[in-house]
Length: 441
Image (cartoon, rainbow, N blue to C red; front, top):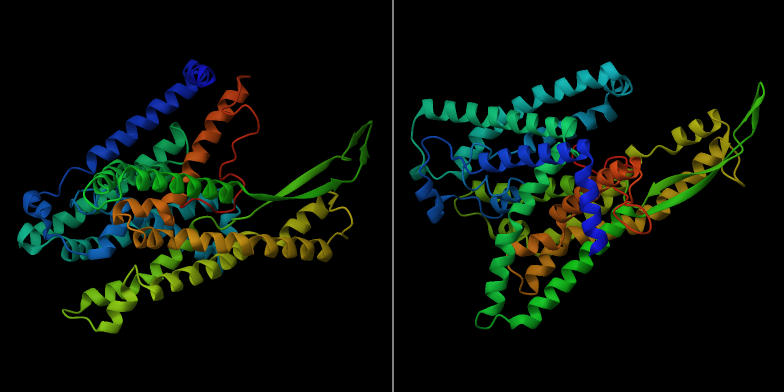
């Protein structure tokens, strides 16, 4: 306890770190306040009485906005249109050589960032009316074309403002601003969901305190497993040859290439969920949907979860293959005079790295698949839907990854100024070593 208090004091002594933390907290507070401001003209009382529709889709999307989606807030779309635009630009960087070339240059990256912002506006313009008609009941909103136009403008501008908040946090605050905004929305729902679970367990037929403690222990174990998944690496030893330039000798040292067990991060779950949600959208298009469509759109059903698990595994391999290039790693090593002991430089090195990457990706992909479907198992064992979302899936991985990333930055500030780190032994490893763990980081 004393060490923790000393660490907090050390954090507060560093002016730059203290200012960054206060700026981050202040900007996140602005975001949370905005998530409670309802769109002008919407009857919030009628909306709160349960008139908003959407079913499972609304519950899933509401997690990433801290409830703003269901409250018809000005921040209802949140940061997700920007995330969608970022993913599209990432995929274009793989498929379009011209975009891929720009990603390697500083001026090109700035231009791609500008394109991402324009694409965000375009997505908002199409997504805002869909959100208004699908989520806000007709009895809770004005029937006016002018109101629809102003609401689309407000939702679009609000998303751009949230994007600006995230960029300011990244620039002047602590951690990745976009990721922190998503995480704060997820954590905002945790106290309410946990309180509902406690009330349900303590009520008649709920199982009592013992079952509640068992749930908490299982939850902590799942979080520990996610931390191992995020931090797990396979280190490949690299030896650098000695070379003499003038009177100085360079090289002759051993280093390591850290291959992450989960190099794809949370992206496979996002892609897989985007596909398995299609039957839900199709089911809502019918007034009385067919029974077969209802069964495959059921988020607790066997078909839905098996499809989600399988697609997460496949997307993990796909995303790892496009983010980690063994040929480029082998060429970079050869160019800098490095080699893996016992392996010939060039194609043999690339084949060796590719083989190791395939071996460690399989268990990582399977575990990531189980994390994706864990909320369904939690509901199956009697845990309420709200709290079950924190037993796995995208929300838990984002929380773990972003918190580790932020703690790693705090520890770096402490160690730079010769203070002790946050841990007595070892170092906190965030997502810095991963190719694309964060949603926008």
